[in-house]
Image 1 (tube, rainbow, N blue to C red):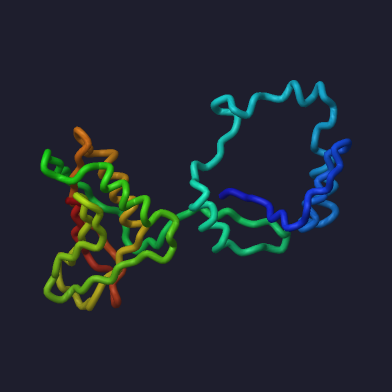
Image 2: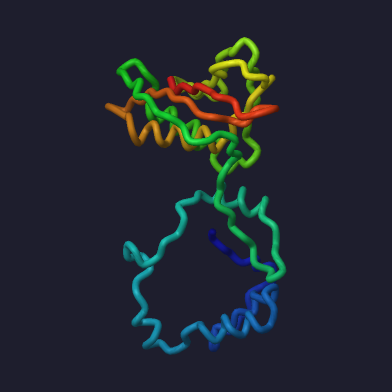
Length: 206
């Protein structure tokens, strides 16, 4: 998990002591603690490592848009600190099998990654698919890449759900396992949430 501060107040202009007046939301004790931790000795600051050096700082590789998404859906806790949530979507399915289907005619890796980018950080993405008749349904598509699902058997459910995070995980794992010359194709099976009980589902990336 990652944390950030809500700086609703103006930062005090106090260059001599580097006071963190903007931390009033955190309460006086926290503000004083943070202020006391800011180095004011020039020699100390010169000895600090270069933050641009690889490995010194580890920041989640989130775009401004994804950070904004998470910020907007986070709730303040009693300390006044905002939780920058792990940006994950809805998840209705379990562990999947993976079978390589890659060939030169299959979709490009880049098109499939665009599907991932389009739904990343969206915690509302989900797709309801009928079970009766076991129809195949392409639930996401971008140019040459389609992600589709279908029930493998009728077992009492009327429908089943697949979430955005399920799709993201499957596409990323398929690319990691099977990509060849910029192409990827895969299929597999998994259990997903049905309206009555777990539903076996076959998926395809094609």
